[in-house]
Length: 84
Image (cartoon, rainbow, N blue to C red; front, side, top):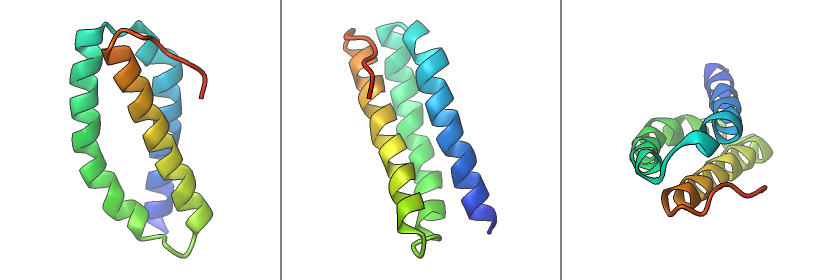
């Protein structure tokens, strides 16, 4: 199941991005990153839909998406990063 591997890789990238990159971004850079992030979701959501038989896995992916989006929005507004 190639899509499962692709989603797992995206989840790891989201976690690492929040931990290592996001705290270093200015609000303007976070704004650009949020725009790119939203565009990249258009590619990821069809992949996630392919493993509907694995709801916990799909839910974990969408949890990472929501956590990352919220962190980007906080960074964009200058609030910084909070633990999720």
